[in-house]
Length: 435
Image 1: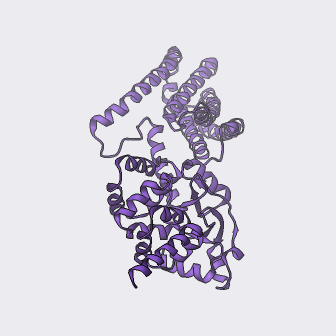
Image 2 (image 1 turned 45 degrees about the vertical axis):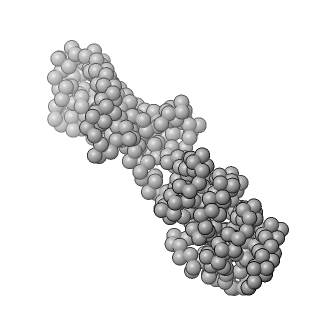
Image 3 (image 1 turned 135 degrees about the vertical axis):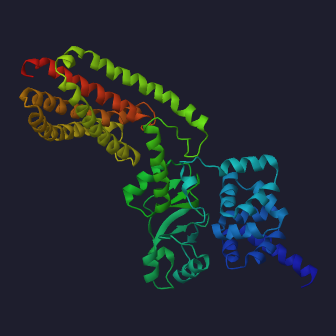
């Protein structure tokens, strides 16, 4: 082809790109990445920028890898930063670093910031390799594209507008059963849910639980499809979050790891150990109030840990259930009355059952009906208080904008010990005549 013909061909392509960007994007899709990149490299940057938002994610990814450095550098500098960041997240890390190194440092710093989603944001949990499918694409074309991409863990396809905005979904079993000549619009179903990249993990969990989804699409602020959160990925993230909650519940920093530096561990733990020491002194002070009663009836010293231990276990159960409900957004601070009432009733019923067993055992051991009555009644009171504390402590933390896992077990232990000791020794003092 002569130079004049090549120039004329490029002019025609330029007009096509500028005047019909959606159709131009469809024409580029079946081409190899090398041929499409060579065609775009001969066009001015403004023509490439016009058609780029209409390209599906996989085509844009392949072109970004195939484009000459000059064109790619200009494209990354002129594209909307959020769109450029999402596209870079799709390419392999080595290629991403190469492209970033070639652009202006100011632009690079902005893109790197946009690519670093908060750890608990949907953007950090999503798989950015999602592909959007046009509504006018046939079932046969969609299946061919699926086979070409070879992506696992797919549960449904996402239908997008020419501007790549998320519009609908197509379930895989519907795709497999449809006529290959049907369009995706004919078998598409309405979206059940979608989240933005900045949505929190709690919001993602809430959407997945509410709609019983296996995957959840992620969109940018303009509604463009940029990723998908797979259920198994979210489960792994929640498992990590749960393990962190276990640490914070007992006063260990979220930042500490099994192989962390000794002094780092000491620095993070020592403050909470001092707080725990103060609460232990508080429990001891309660015991000290009844020193004369204990001196008179030494059996009380033997039985006292039983009440505190049982109430501590009951409180831990209530705390675990309430924490889970808050984590998966099953409950919120507004449910505090229902949750605490339920846990108090549970504590009363369980406490009564345990009190009967404990009372029978103490009577058989000591032969004292009064001692059995003291430990039985204090057991009921302590377990009701434990259920109340286990439910209300994390809810109060949420109400005041704090992490519900933050050392809640230390506070709970204090409550159960103080109430357990006070109720047991206080009732023993009142019923001293029966001991």
